Amino acid sequence: MVKLTIELIQSSLQYMNPCRDRELDLRGYKIPQIENMGATLDQFDTIDFSDNDIRKLDGFPLLKRLKCLFLNNNRIVRIGENLEQYLPNLESLILTNNNISELGDLDPLASLTKLRTLSLMHNPVANKQHYRAYVAFKLPELRLLDFRKIKQKERDEANTLFKSKKGKEIQKEITRKAKTFVPGGNMPDPKVTNLTPQEIHKIREAIKNASSLQEVERLTRMLQAGQIPGQKPLQPQTQQNGQRKHIYLFIANLMFGKYEYVCCCLRFNKCHTSQIFNWSIGIYTFFNDSNAHHNRSFLHWYEMFNSI
Image (cartoon, rainbow, N blue to C red; front, side, top):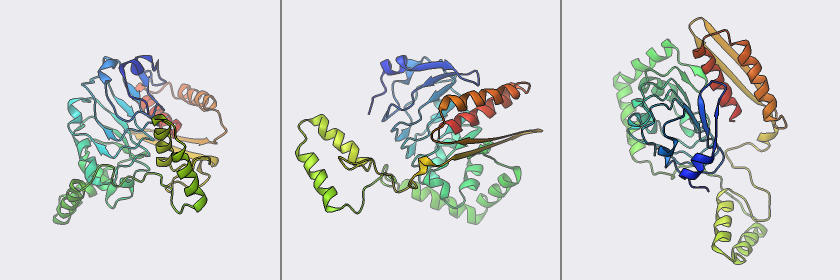
């Protein structure tokens, strides 16, 4: 793990992204928590925290300029309180593939009045009963949830449900579950199960032969990741074997007024990132006659696809 220091922030890649927003790339450092963000001097519209080990969404100073956060592929289980005090203009929040478990854990997002796009795909919470209805009820200004537009009919049905007697009972139960939640307790971390005697022997020998604290810490990280010393990394139980050998299909369907953008992106694991990036620039140029707002929405979806 790498601590998010002032030096790391200042030395990380900074660029103008295809949306013509200034972006800070903090991707893939295995950062455990968000800190020292005052070093950004509030100079960025977008910050990419993808592929880290962040467990809680908090630790921000006041960042008035920040509009988009990418936090996919982390280990987030909690969302900090009072985010609106620090991120008052946040419009897009991508939390795909994290570990948020309960509907009540989403309540802090209700204070983000300018939030328009939210992704919680591949979080346990997305499989909860009344998930979309609850989010639509709690975040009345949200337009897109998990790559799907929240239709007015869907929002009306959610309001009717949760304002009824039955809905109020559901809310009480949701709140109760959130309050009894233990941080990290329900995380579907990769675990090694049904170990053979040979695998147990390898683990014991690796621990016995560790000659330094650094080696012990390395072994600890390997075991937490579900990897047996001397073997290839094991796939987490929550993933299908050979997942990275399949084609990724990502459909972005954006509907604003009379505009509708449908982007079907196929990504094979051998396909080079630059090829997909060049292709996306071609699509961006094709839609360049439309207004900037729609271009921004389209490219945010592309950024999300590229982060999978």
